[in-house]
Length: 184
View 1 (cartoon, rainbow, N blue to C red):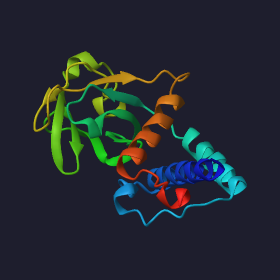
View 2: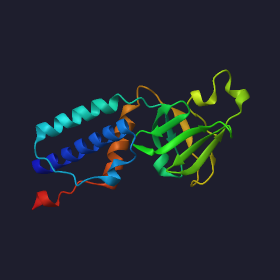
View 3: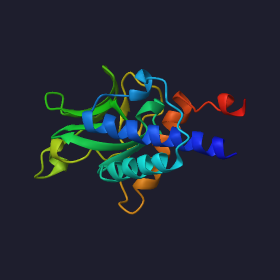
View 4: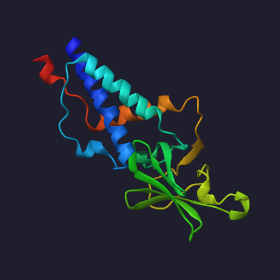
């Protein structure tokens, strides 16, 4: 059992570390280009790696959360990249950008516009639309799967728990730990 626990800790440490690296470099999903994960049986090193990665991840400021999108790769917490630009924290190939010519927010996955949010400049007020997060129930499907997403403000007291789950869920689905070699 101890070997299984250590294998799981190594998986968790690696997953958190990779999201921290991806988030820092804005390189997209690292899990798709992963080198084979080294299984560590050093519990202290794994615990330190997890602690360092959690500290990095806790420093990420989420701007809003996307829920209910038919394109599930877009659901989750998002952070600001710059004026008029946001990305999903655990997958920076998911982008939301302000299109000033069309006067709309566009939510992409890769190069494909999945959803849009038309903005009435008279309703926005003094701030330019690209300066405020696109929080709305009024997203429309462009090339995405239904239903259209809803964007919500982040509750600062609950922002880290769901983000940690997103990291765990993403890596578990794409590259789960293997326990076969331990059981032998």
